[in-house]
Length: 567
Image (cartoon, rainbow, N blue to C red):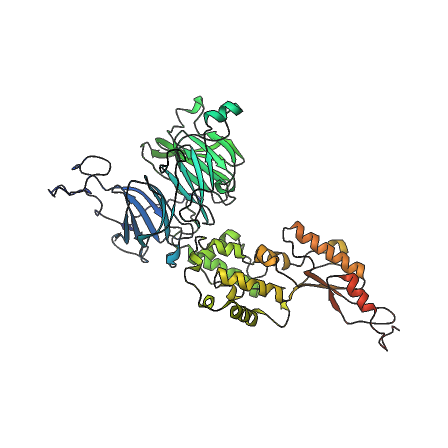
């Protein structure tokens, strides 16, 4: 950035709305509300304990001292030129039955799609609850975290959704737990006890790998590496987004020679850099942020001073990409997608494209027709990431499901079966019917991939050993995922003619092995290559074969055609 100076400007504020007591002391009614955290009649300042932006940047969800969650929807004219800040007013409000310990906004929150505007929160002595921030009245799901010995609800001090939004992780006292969002009123799928019990220490001697304390901070990177920070100044990294074992654990406490500089009394906030290589740890009563390299987490690589967070309260940190605003990132991303499409259609631009940006585009439901761009194929698994596995994708049931199964199958066959070969050399997009819903896709997918013939143009050189898999084949097989590959029956690889059964068989073995090594195996017999029998006596029409021994033998039995001898 050079010598660029960043300045801040207040563009919106709640004003003095919450700068008042939450108890009206002028009310002498015997049923006057009492303070949650203290005695009756004491004034309570309704300050903001925490505020979180939604991932799409359109909404702010706050937690106040009166133990309420509030939703503030930012106006579209937020960044317009104006003389005074815009006054923010709450859109919705939820009063918790007890003290709110933590909350988390769903990673695929999109204000344009109310089925994704979800928040997960935990309250003392109550189950975890999933609610809609636009209407808190209904709990869409509840999850139980109960002590097996006392049958009391365990306190959840931190919450974090996984990257795909299908699971979430909770942090408590010496414990990490992972839940499945789709399992209503269920317990955790996996639980990590951060500190081994007396029996474990007696049996195994040494302490197990892990961190102790109350887990206050959670963060996960794109590789699924979950990091947890505790009040004891310890940090632990866990594989598989928290479902795997502890990879490494260490203390952020400084060595004696640096204690006068690197201070702190417990990890309050953790953040990964966008590339997932560096971890930033912020402590309470600390003047800086510690930076660690994921390749060697034991030694700190940097100390960012000047934070001035000497308070014991929880103060967070955020990373901001200055190249485009979080709130108004759609326009910039649309511009990138437009340039990519211009490159494909006209060959005039060269713009790099990342799968991360593609995931963001899907999240915002952008109609950019990216599936028609060569070598950029959107997989169904990535499309599912833009929806909640909790079932939000099927919130509106398709009328097609009201028909009998046999009639639905007839419709699938009529719409999806193509009498001609489907060429996937450069362009292919998912049939719209397969995007209607999960049940429709599951039913129609078998018909679409089993009854159609898919043809690919191969890329090969004159030297046999330099042949490569067709350019569109591998991305396409990855895009249709395992569910599509398992029902594939006919895939034509149109590269060259094979004149003998040995050549054709070698080609099939080569393609099959190459795809298997890439993790995209198909059903045996689904791959076909083109054969042509030519000798001094006959010339048979080209034929597709997945069994060269059988098909070449059949071609050799055909009668000799007159006038086909070579001169």
